[in-house]
Length: 215
Image 1 (cartoon, helix red, strand yellow):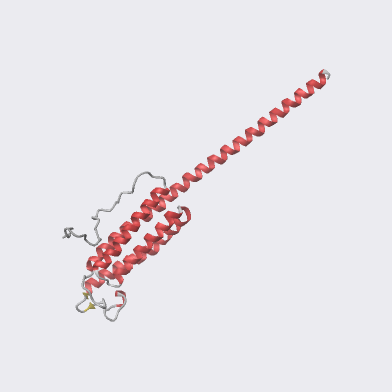
Image 2 (cartoon, helix red, strand yellow):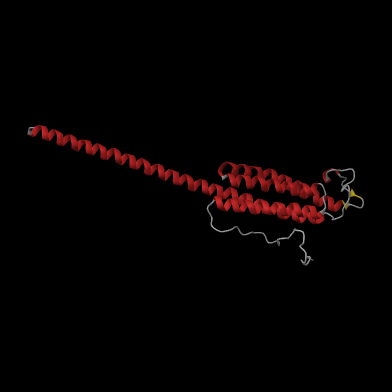
């Protein structure tokens, strides 16, 4: 093999090595760019999920508080018909129903019901956002909480017994706790969720033998 051939082979190897290095550099650069974009997308969607989850949770807490307050205007009497001749308080006379509720009570409850239903309609957008960008567990918990709040608001509309209304509100509270846990897990937050409301946790279980009844 003469010198020119050796030089040609050496040059070819050098060019091939340079090309291989350039291709490898491009591949690594593309992978790094892809990883960077994926990281940015994860961070962006994490922020969006935090925004949707926190807004939905905040709205749920505020609505739950207002329904709880409105439920204080219900009575605890047991009647076969809560509002004889009516299925919804929204259709009762403005002056109220004799011996059941007066005009002021009706006004307070009607305003609370209409406000609750309007807010629940608005919350549909947040439920949809959680369904689109949240984890399956977050989406299920959000829908469960939303439905529980609808049930609690419906108790006001039906002029249910106050005990039944508070039980529905407590069910919504439990659904809210489940949503908070699912959201924290989806957002990779360590530890157990801590309730942010100030009302005491009522124990609605039947008292066990030997328990002292709550006042």
